[in-house]
Length: 470
Image 1: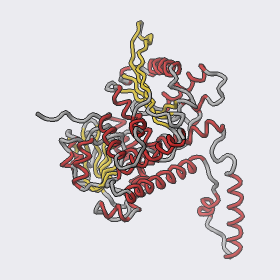
Image 2 (image 1 turned 30 degrees about the horizontal axis):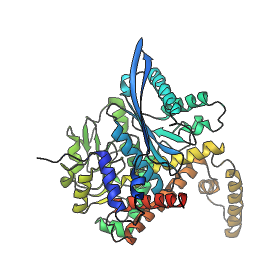
Image 3 (image 1 turned 180 degrees about the vertical axis):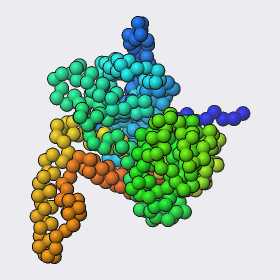
Image 4 (image 1 turned 60 degrees about the vertical axis):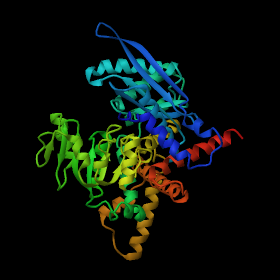
């Protein structure tokens, strides 16, 4: 009889257990860190279409070792409590790894957003926000949602506006959610953040000679073949930046209706425009289409980026995966069984707990902006530009020549919000990469990067608990 596959939540807990065994922790502390602190199921009625419809939603706070707790809200017809708990746990570990002072949380509403008008979705979302608020799962110092699958900037605006109505005297009310439009308290660079984090994480891998050698590759992203699964927000931005800025070759894209393959490389922007126009990738010119999209996961490439759903690589297909680097842009794209098979094959895994952390990092920047009530760059941009101008004048005087106007303009530019956000994200991803690597290098019980990432998170959280209970 075939063993029952391990669930998403079980996979996360098994990864945690494997890492905690490599550490020396006080008795019971690992269990304390692993256990979800609170999970709330909400059923609420919404007046729609001449009657009432009942919706089911969840919000989990995995940990409260730091506040606020942070994590997205997804709208999906397949959402369930276990998925929410697993994602909340991942968020705890993710924040710890990238040194963002949040605990982990996650939320979901069991709904297919495509079945409702924009006005109906707003009504449903505002009711959900009311339910979250009265149960203590919403607030800038307590619990801060963000966009996830099926939600976006507009959804966050509705939640923020509803919270402000409920708490009109809270001057930090805008910080109750992140991922808002810039004109409504958001931060530039948030939409691209998770994909940008994937780019920075991969760049750091290709800058690290020992890791590149371990994967059987040469340093640098230029010309590397990449297959992407999922052309959503994360996958699109990651592939776009890797192609346009780093010279990587996107040879395959897997979408819901099938896959595209082109050994010479696909134009990511053109594929997205085609998908938006026709609602599918089938028929895209200069590429081979297959209705069996999942098969392309097994096609030989340098880097495979699963950037959509959890569990797409499992015990049935893991042995056939042929990439050299598996970069987990999605949450939980490998099951626990698949992870073991992939490790045995010698494929280098860059884990989701690290690589997917760009979104929460830039959410943290947005939250700081909301609490400080000052746009990034406002205080020092012109001051820096004036300093740069004086330096350029000295250089021109010393060399007796005028610097090219276009080059001079770039040198003169002071820090603005988007540049500061990107610089902060890159610094975060680079620093975290080497902290994880050091954890593996220094602990003889750890032999892979995922276990190292979990161990790093557990160690940091354990230190906080030790400080709290001295």
